[in-house]
Image (cartoon, rainbow, N blue to C red; front, side):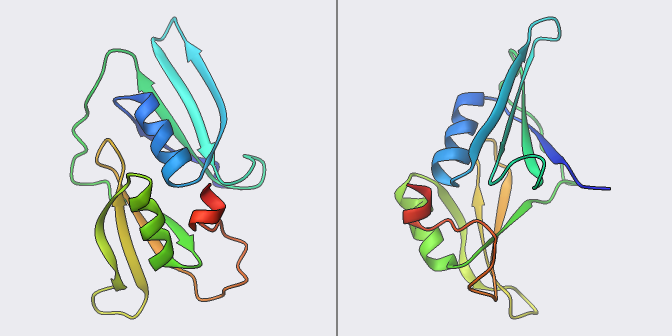
Length: 142
């Protein structure tokens, strides 16, 4: 078995695609309109769907806003340089809602950013600098 994707409903597909590709450095992997169902699916990620888990952004035509509820938490992305990553995200217009620092009751360094729909994205400082996880430094996301 393999975890394939997480789906997020978005109110403005173009804003969300800009955030996930230009601010967080993901690639648009595929996008398709479904006119009979009045929705569009766009898949974004750091690698091919055959190798990595990706995000499915679902835009239901004509729906601009969702109640996120209190059950959903966040998605998480491992980064090699959390401080540089947050600065790069801010420089590209992203919203850092919790600056980097140790998590409460622990030592793992985390930060949170927020996408245009209000979904939270946790950034986690990786311990191994040689990790294969996507780097979100200004150079990698440019």
